[in-house]
Image (cartoon, rainbow, N blue to C red; front, side):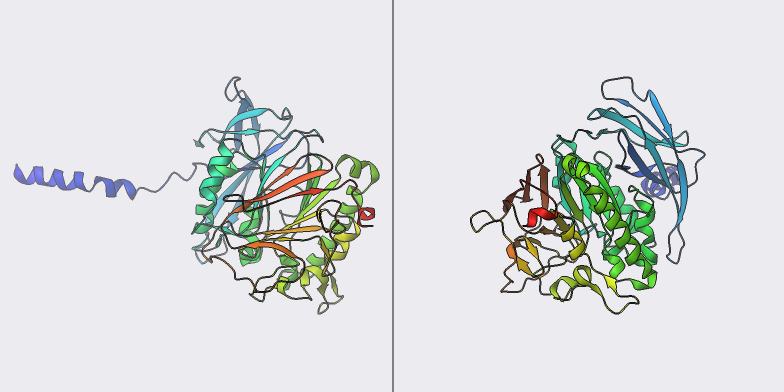
Length: 436
């Protein structure tokens, strides 16, 4: 009898270990996030399962209405990570359409083989007089994600309408055969399942030709999220890949394809009727054209590839500064440097303030913000002791940028953890003619 009791005790004592060894249900949705597909009344829901399911479904309904009274179906694509294990996962995408602008919805996603938790989002307001609020940052990893807790809380209480993640995720998504990417996407679910999470690629996504980035995110357009544009409030936002200038093995032609696409996009955004409706043109790209860091990155060089292009390709590859200036881009958002830096209005390495007293009132060149201090395992980047004239404010504090496009003339920016810097950009006219 004693031996039987002892055996039972041993089995019971091992029960937690036995439970932990049970593999997860491979059809259970996880890593849920939403993004704006780029056309009115829509939202895209993306999630992951590790086994194939027969369907990809989102059940949803208006907040306060009948739960899950609406259904949308999409499809899943197989993603095989490029690591040695060749891990397989299924990325599910469902586009919701005919959403009521500015209305709150409740949803869950999955299939009869497993459902996610219940989440909510607010459909984007389609009015050009709306004043959207953004959180903006780059370079946030699984380790040392200093900004994550604040962003989680602020997102769920409705502080932001959109998140802009300006490259470098997880550190790095491909590591441990993609498991680090899985963990990062689980971490940001508490943000990205509630608010459109809009992205651009950074250098830490480069492994296997950016495959983890291209497969895990769902941005507008047909370029696998590498570059795209969309409209929100009185702003036209353009997301760019700076990485095409540095990873030439993946195709020099990408530099020219993006440049031609960008030129056409800017031409369309500058048609008088479009610029009148959405006068703010804002770009986001990972590696800055300018910075005052002391790490020998591209932005520390006068002959920056992003700014001026490359002369060692055939034909020479054009940079971005002249094109963005020619089409009157108002604000350029960057990351990559693990610091915060605000520049005076700058073009061609020269300062073009609106005036000495009010530099950001009718500035005569684009305004640049570098916001790469959200927190990652690489900590901070050092600054040079004596920055150039175009550097207005810089900090190594952890944090992220908040932005609100108030109306067609006023845009507010602040650097937050606690507010350590803030500016109003005021423009009575937009476009190339505003520089003169």
